[in-house]
Length: 228
Image 1 (cartoon, rainbow, N blue to C red):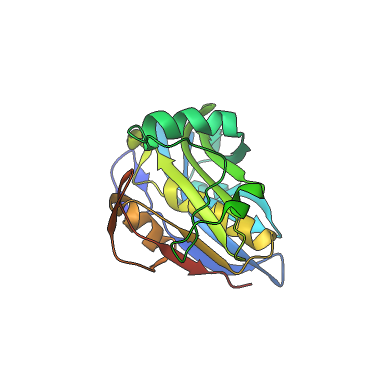
Image 2 (image 1 turned 60 degrees about the vertical axis):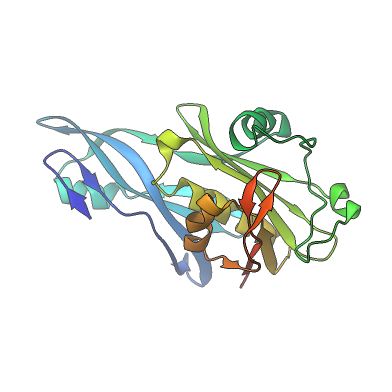
């Protein structure tokens, strides 16, 4: 935890805990901004509980915790959120930001499999697209879809460079994990670029292959077993 006269920062991390009794919920800490009436308006980057409960994503800011620390009540709160978006919204981000040099067509799904084969039946499943919005601007994206081999694929993780190092990538990965759980899958995998591996590792993924050249960079397969 780092503290200055007007700024209080919490390291992004995630926990498992019981929420609403016996429901084992996934808690992802991210950031929100508080404008506080504390002599003068200060900005506090405080914790935001990212709660996934029975497949429903909701957000619970730690108002009381922040207020206790600063001995003040929030005057106005702006919450960063993950929401579902469309393929039409995510496509230009993938094309222009994540895969600018990609030659092959970018589609909703991928035919890749975890065992390095191609299965065109993957293209028949329904993809879910996630965006992280701040001030109505999409600054992070990810997607997921079922694969024909019984696994679930997380695909296309990207966060605007100006918004990195805040746990947004981890939150977007965990949103896909929860979507996979909702669709009754127990294994999720991805094919990240080497420079993004730290985010996947922090979200609980483990490497499943060596690093190798691909159309979009140096990539490797990774996976995560999903527990209930």
